[in-house]
Amino acid sequence: MLDNIVPTVANRDHGGKSHGSLDADIIIKNAPDPIFISDLEGKILSANDAVYELLGFRTDEVLEQSLSRFISAEETREFTAALREVIERGVIRNTLLNPRSASNEVIPTTLNASALRDSDGKVIGAIGILRDMRELDKARAYADSLIKYAPDPVFVSDLEGKILSANDAVYELLGFRNDEVLEQSLSRFISAEETREFLAALTEVIERGVIRNTLLNPRSASGEVIPTSLNASALRDEEGKVIGAIGMLRDMRELDKARAYSASLIKNAPDPIFVSDLEGKILSANDAVYELLGFRTDEVLEQSLSRFISAEETREFLAALNEVIDRGATRNARLNPRSASGEVIPTTLNASALRDPDGKVIGAIGILRDMRSYEKVVQDLQESKSELQEKILDLEKFEEVVVGRELKMIALEKEIENLKRESEGLKRELEKVGRGQSRWT
Image (cartoon, rainbow, N blue to C red; front, side, top):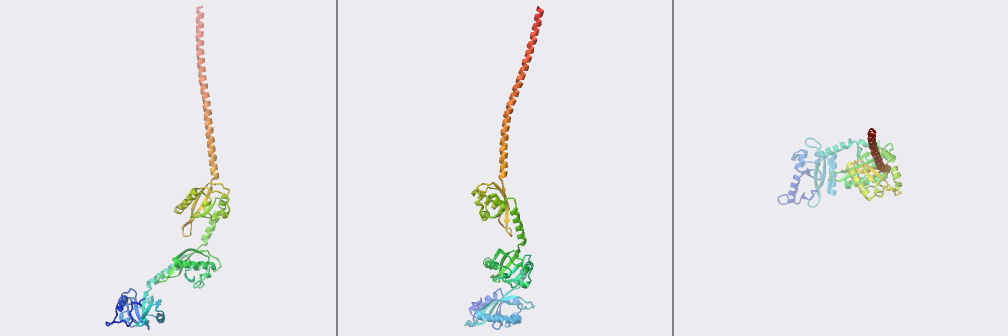
């Protein structure tokens, strides 16, 4: 990494340092990470300010000192082995060192080192960059705590499917001891087919960083096959490279029981019920649907609803699906599916949202109501209303006739009364005339 900026020992001008050396010294001195240069015996030849700040020592307590003064005997052997790797390969990466500071604190660091070469290209030492891992270790400890106490089963695997760690919920789910899970391949707990699917899912994790709702059916210590869904995200090293996966399992047994119960309710419901995806493809249907339409199962399942309803109603159904997505339900949409015999059957549709485990709407559960009996009742009422209206008209006509006759009879009676009164008046007049004639005679 710093090979190109650190001078070789022969590149000195008459002033004692080359232009490249001055540039290298400036870069090293002002680098934010602790950087030091050592010979092949591990003696520190130079160090930047960040090294003194990290360790808390004075310059004279670091320069010309062996690195073994600051690290354990074991790590000194590892560092010496790392120097040999630098000689052979020119670089080492992410070697763990835990130097002890002036205050006696052990500081976790990682070491990346590249070769320091002379003018002939011979490796004469190493340029080391330390990375203070205290904050990262705190973050890892926090992440480990989150995983350990997560309510869902969480595990970490490498890219070959070997389980590196797992929380208590994993052991509770599967019933195995720690030593029966850690360092074991996931293939020990799942079928060969699911192992292939899991490895394919790991490839997806590498490419996309995450996978969702992959089905796994691990076998527990008691031999029970446990349905689960797996969500996994990438486990990355310090350089961002994917080195494994963090998997979270969701126990699907209770959900499967709920699904079986709801499937039983749907199957045995008296009304026709079907399930469709968001494109209107029928995923399942109960017996009442087949009884209503007269089709076989294979003529309904995986078919688009547009096979059974008109193009206009298909557009209305898709609009109803949009309403289901937005509002969670739609009510009393009109559908007129055509049966196997060609009969157009009037129905109303009530639909509610079908959701995945994450709550996302993935389809609709539709309930049809056969409206033929209702429409027959409405038709009968209309016919009865028409008949009643006709009878009312007939009664009104009859009433007009009867009332007319009654009025004529009343008029005749009045006329007869008038005639009677006139007749009696004439009779009295005649009697008067008769009495008057009697007197004259």
